[in-house]
Length: 137
Image (cartoon, rainbow, N blue to C red; front, top):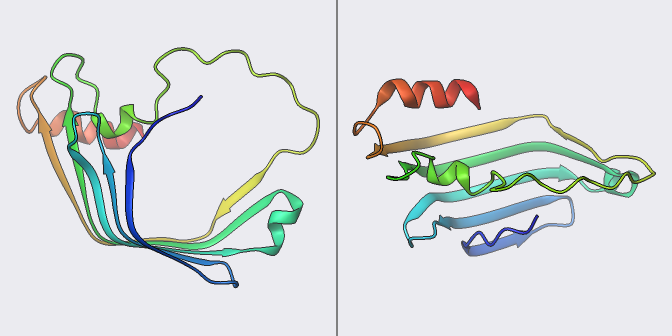
């Protein structure tokens, strides 16, 4: 499944020890609205396990982020979430032999994260729907 999700990144930094830094990351929706902005994303991962089909992330840190949650006025789907949900049923996956990837994340840190929610499909600022949305994910 191919998605054309517009992401803008101001600065990327890589270190040989497996640390990656992204500054001023923005995900933009189809209408050109910002859906997510974060000042910094820092990821620390072990590089060696990649040779054995393993991803071992020691930590992910998001600093100074704003998540804009808006509901589509026709369908009620949350814009940010609908970017990652397949529109149609995906075709049957072919069975591949071999090992699957083992992906583990040890620590996630969220610092100064703000959520902005607007729901024109239901009633504006529908807190009950927002709370249910968080529980379901």
